[in-house]
Image (tube, rainbow, N blue to C red; front, side, top):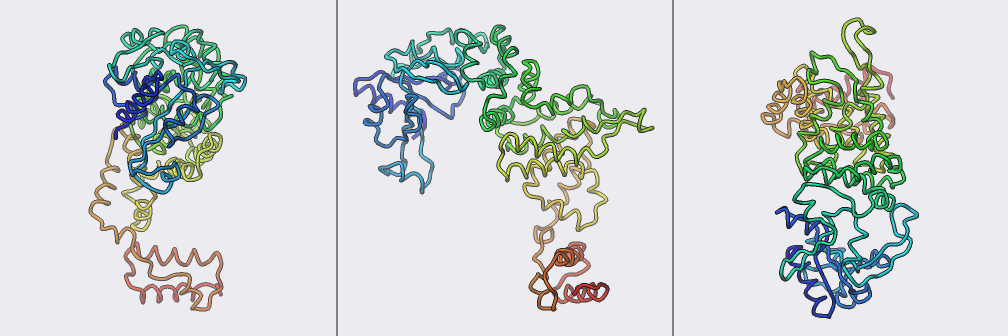
Length: 460
């Protein structure tokens, strides 16, 4: 069952039980725009307890805020526990009781929720007019109490009611305004825009995890350049990512970067990120040159041209710091840092020894490294020679040559009477280097080389 069909079914059952029920929010906006919607939400005058009685297979997250997650089980299971161990993933629809929110002392959750009986009361608590439309699932009639349809036609992101009040309730709404404006190619209404500029310093009250997730959406929805331009224009960028804001005005050597400064170069790369791209690639693109501003040296100082000595190493540390600040997973942090650490190595691929080239091509998620390099070139000098070189190498080289089976192991070293220690790694890497350089091909040749290496050292 599709999410829309399941949401319609939920509305039908609620109405059969004597309650009001409507599709609401972003799904209605997307239906009117002719866009696909991943999530469908329902609003109703049924209290959470009543919703859960009608839908026993529901998740009680958010009940104190009038929210129940109703889950459809494609396998016919009877409890929420059935979903945890099986696949495919069930369709989920958020069902929210009409309510009014009173007080937002934490800048995210209402201090007190008052259940309401009319949709007119409910929409007043929502963020933007285009996200506060309701639809009768039986007739597709749209209920609009805040002028959302007019703003859809005009291409405007407008806060409901008083913008400053909406943003003080939930500071993340300021970034959401930017994201919707960028993704939909809309303008932010003037009063709403001024409120964001005024309250931009308050964005740091948002939890790092929520901010990270919103920024990731902003980077991966196909409008990353416009989104970051709007973050800059609304004064949110220096509050959220001051390291990126510092790229503005940092000149680059024109022979390599005719496009302009580090900020312009980064924007051009963001512009080429397609919707649905891997989040780590998107963050890698954003952060790949983050080490340039603190390492900038003008031609007058270097004697030849603008240089950024050590910007990769500095950039890796800065990227790791940003990832820690935004609470990325260890795996995500490692991949983003690796993209920053390796992005300059592509210039050397034609001159790399076979072993070095093969190890480079064996990097985890090498397709992301390759794509970052392609975007880097297209957004600067536009020369794709090295990109084409390594693409050919990968296409023409069998996987077992790039990643051959190991000829000797640590157990072999122990069998030769060596005590385990740091030298094991050095010896095994020397053997693998010879194998990757195709100087040796068999286990016997590897053992002979190992004995030769040991005869020239004092390792015991």
